[in-house]
Structures are given as C-alpha cells and as structure tokens.
Image (tube, rainbow, N blue to C red; front, side):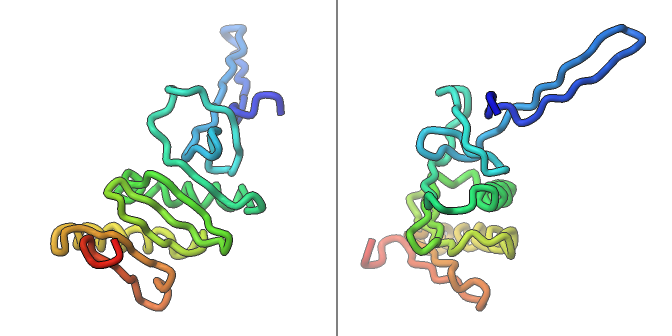
Length: 161
C-alpha cells in the first residue's frame, strides 16, 4: 500500500444529491517504535512530529509478530488507569515485556499474552495505588507469576533502588 498511514477508505454514493462522499480513516498510533507509529493492527507507519500527544516509546523484538503485539498493546491501552501512566514498553530477548511508568516504577509484565490482560492490568493498577498510599510508591512490580496468584512488589526506598 502506498499510504500506510491510511487505515481505510470508503465511498458513499448519494444518488439524490448526485455526489460521492469519500471517508478516509487514518491509522492511530498507540506507541512509537523506532520513530514511527505502531497501531492496533501491528502496522508501522510514519507519524508527523507534533501531531500526536506524547506516545509511549516501544522496543519490541524484531522477529515478534506485529499483529499479535498490536492487539496486545490495544488491549493494554484500553485499561486507561494503567495506560495513562505508561512511558515506555520494552521486550527483552526472552519475550518478556517491561513497562516503565511515569512514577519511574518498572513493571515486569511477562509475555504479551491476551489473557488475562484486562484482569492483570486492573489488578496492577489497584496494587500500584495501594503501594503509593501505604508504602511510598513502587520501584518494581513483577507480574510474571500472576497466573499463580502472586505479584511481587518492591517499594521505593528498599535496598536495590
């Protein structure tokens, strides 16, 4: 496709008005990956600087499935109380995703699997809020064992910061 930043174009015929209306749907970037936009379908496309609010920066593995990552990022972005805090996403060589939040906290998410993403994100948001209120904030949260009923949280100020 010549215009990758265009997601879809539809035409509407208005017979009585003797017109054709063209509807252009742009791609909406969820993150910036190597200076280009990355959307819910896993498509990379050029973005004009300054046209989008500050996007989280992403670094995914070169061989990772872009459509799968796009769907995963879109699901994560739908949990606004967490997504609004995300500054960057990084995928390590083992496929584990790490999120860096505005507070400086690092979240070791685990692999980008679609289930139980919403429940995991909502639980994380509650835990981060609780850690902020009762422990002065979180330096690190590890969700790799979420399916086993465990989340490991290291409060700010604990040795190792």
